[in-house]
Image 1 (cartoon, rainbow, N blue to C red):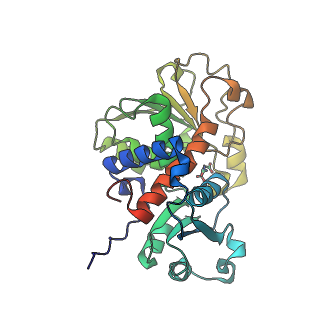
Image 2 (tube, rainbow, N blue to C red):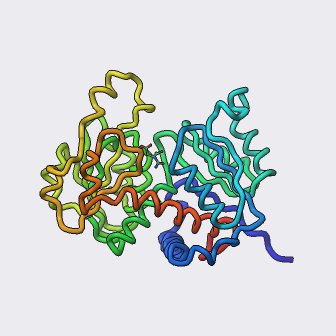
Length: 315
Ligand code: NCD
């Protein structure tokens, strides 16, 4: 009798090895080049998108990804429209949805909720963002963007700017990029929004040789950057409105600040942006955030193929 495959979840970007990430990137490139060849790859299968927090790109790109693979999608897009509003626990919801779908994509405001979900799930659980903690599929999107736009993931100087404290996409991206040799992180934030100590520790204890500097201004570091990763100040994670209002416009990227940038540098942003990138930057040769959002669909197709079909390697 064929051995059942072990259940794999994606909770943290380090749940994937560097080889597995390389394999997902190859699959995503192949899908992007020949999307029609994958149009029935997941026919007869379903994913459930359980979103307890707002989302546009993550949820819709997962749904588009599954539909473009010939599969189907069910789920909810807010706590209020699910039994969570009646007090149902994540554990119970996951047990039930495990019987309705072949994989579960979960976004939750509580850090660690996907770990609980994985404990009770009979199908793969994909963390689509847990509070201010992690967002591994955004990281896959970011890695695909860097890989396609800069041709590789090693030896890069990556500026991360904005809310490095609460920004889960930053935490996951740092975690992933510490495994590529020569990454130099430039962490640009007001003191109160600097990256938490555990994130700095990930760089100090990086599996590959990496370094970081803490900065308060983007202009002075602009010429050194290969990537400038802008982020939104995470209003929903602040304890009081006054602190948010004081910090929200700490860093606003405009064409003037980009003057010192290297040719070929790319500006990324997981989106949504609020005020931190002047729309005039959209026309500059550096802007890649809309391409980035588009890559998100292809890398999620590759991930779903790997989790549901075992395609593209060991997942
Ligand atoms: C991010 C998130 O939800 O963490 N958005 C996304 O998934 N593209 C970033 C953010 O909300 O600021």
